[in-house]
Length: 360
Ligand code: 13P
Ligand code: SF4
Image (cartoon, rainbow, N blue to C red):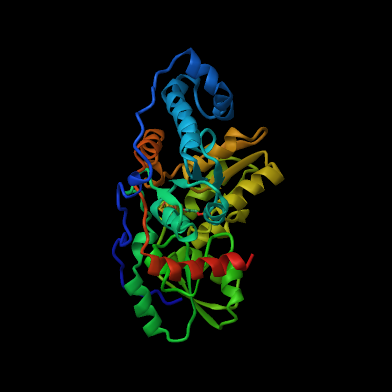
């Protein structure tokens, strides 16, 4: 499988324009963040949701923020979208919608809220803005990037198009808006194979994740031309590591995200998007499971699951972990940082995202 050698630069070309939305939404006073009997009583039901994965001693640090955020998002007519890799206090206690990249993209478009706070990384916020151009989309931390999105630019895609004339180009949603604007269709880890095969082409360019491309190539007759990007979290898993977990934990079911190297996926029992991994645990109820993905996912699933032991290899996504409760509160108080996408680029990017959604 040829891997083009150009390396793209970090492309935050459609960057935040802080405070733009603050003209429409006045800054509010910072809420009282005391830990007291009222806060304890108001949040006790939410602590129940995370009690399996969070020691009680930690809750007084989170609870004042949880209470303030939940009050403020109602006042602001805002919703919080949280990716499955967000920490349990965000995922279970303040999020309105949770899911994988595809689910979040669709939910962003259906919500009636005026403001979306993205619990996730920058490309997800851009996708929300592309699908909901009239909503204010806020990133609690603009530096929450992604090694995949940073690996390729719109100019790189144009060069690929020139090098492979007539070959359709599929972009993983983990890309910037200007990359989405240059491609024929988007995909996520849950629909990549279906998207590739829907094109009816002998050859397809898949970017930017070389491992997702290899994992799709193993399941189809379509010849895949891959870019060389990788997820810095999933590429660190090795077959040796996974085999040693299997040896140390007899009977464990191993479920790997398709951003993992091919040899890891090959020796796993199942591979799928983060949502598909969660569904596997919910439906199959394995006695022991190992989720070969970002750490917080196992916490989030363990918090709501009984009777399953979670074996935990732990690779953190440093970008996802930039999103915290204090930063979410700050976003809601100050209405910052606002994510904007040039309308002309958004219109072209929307075609690529919508083609994917229309595939069902
Ligand atoms: P999915 O949630 O679509 O499986 O993507 C995983 C991921 O790495 C997102 O950053
Ligand atoms: Fe990007 Fe990987 Fe982090 Fe997802 S887990 S945001 S793909 S670096």
